[in-house]
Length: 150
Image 1 (tube, rainbow, N blue to C red):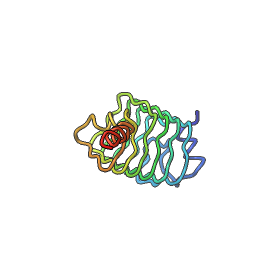
Image 2 (tube, rainbow, N blue to C red; image 1 turned 90 degrees about the horizontal axis):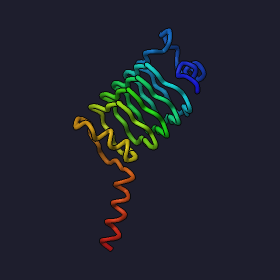
Image 3 (cartoon, rainbow, N blue to C red; image 1 turned 45 degrees about the vertical axis):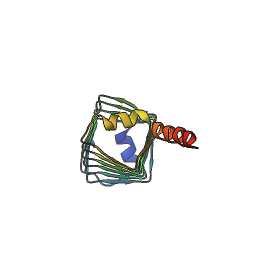
Image 4 (cartoon, rainbow, N blue to C red; image 1 turned 90 degrees about the vertical axis):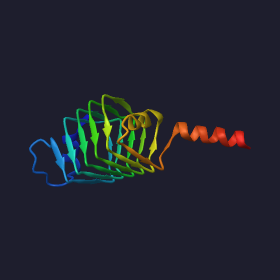
């Protein structure tokens, strides 16, 4: 599995002034697929992700603070001992991810597609806001209720 440092060196997001990329701040990462990358011990601050797909990534001891995720996808990722704070998710899909000791606090989710496990983690904190989201459970219940009503 590759590391975040290798990934950033490869796509050359921008000329970062950080020695080891332990802090990524005020960056914009767009339209890329991040697959099988280990992201460990990183602080993302005020970073915007647009059209980014995280697939089978290990996100460990990482903090996303004041970040924005627009039309992104998290697919089959492992998210452990990480924090998501004051971040906005718009049109983002989170499916098949394994969550462990990773609180999501004071974040906004609008028009997102979340699987049931991800929705559970989002709803654990009453400080999160959800607008126009869908989950597998909600879609199944809608289908069942529509059939009952017919």
